[in-house]
Length: 273
Image 1: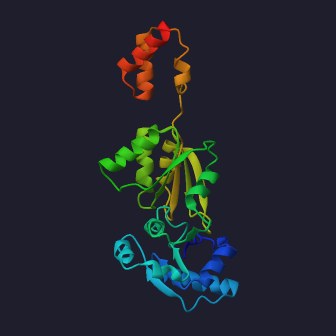
Image 2: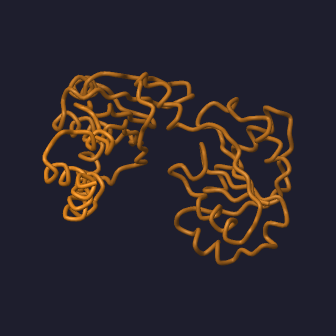
Image 3: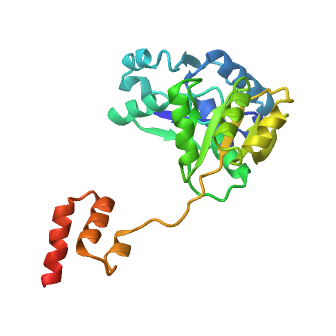
């Protein structure tokens, strides 16, 4: 069986008792970086008086996952197999999804434990009332793709959440300020760690503030959704309207993707009846 186990994103006390139990029982541990995971288990062992020795560790990351997957078979998962990323929830801007897909395709039982996640934590911290958001991970460093994603985020009626490195945060704030200086941005630094800090202000004000800040740490950025003006038109809103059949047919076709001619004919048939 495979079990995906989330690890703390900062504070070691965020590890659950269930996660510790699964890690303790693991025989094979796939991880992004074996050195990082071994260090984490040593710290967790010291804090909780647990022995995580005698584990088989194998690296599994974006550069070798295809090679590793080709070496796996059902027998691999006859033992207790765990996957952990360096920090946080596997598969969320981290490897792990291909392992899950392998299990699904090969009818191998698997489970995913709940746990620490920077995206959801920042979303809850932000104070935005929206119930919908889109997570973009790390944007491309530069070029048309990055610009297109920023335009997509700023034109969306959903919150946009992304990760940014300390080296590019000021650049991101400048880009957002140039595109929409009044858009409200929420920033969370080093979530659950000693130097955790949050900011919420307009893109313009945050850019001017961060010009004089020595930017360090890992950042989650939550971008206010575009204000929705008007309302979404539904089919039930159009049908009762007392307008010419041709106009109504065009509206319905636009909404449903159907042929204007066919919709118009259906409306005429209803009128004749």
